[in-house]
Amino acid sequence: MAQTDNGPFRLEGRLTVDEVPGVYHEHLEWKDEGLPATIDLSGLQATDSSTVALLLEWLSWARRAGQALKLENPPDALLTIAGLSQVNDILGWENAE
Image 1 (cartoon, rainbow, N blue to C red):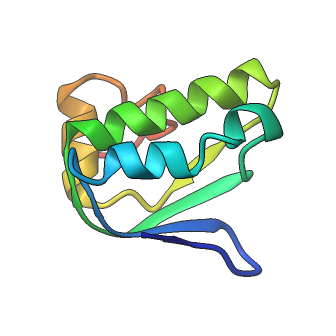
Image 2: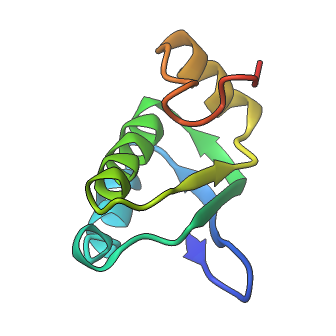
């Protein structure tokens, strides 16, 4: 599901209502220990509204910690969901269509 290398943290594969709870619990330590500066979403193949909810939660954790979090390369389907939910600007995708 997720991998790290020398670059940004990268999410891969499916991240839907079935996978989000596991990913949330897998990275729960980020709430206290801090998040990566950048999360690359280009490897996501399937997303839904629960993906948006997870990303908003991670942004909330980062803001509470005084940290910046960049969510980059969102797939088109995720941009559509964020746009319909009117949270593009919160996710940092205000110029995305």
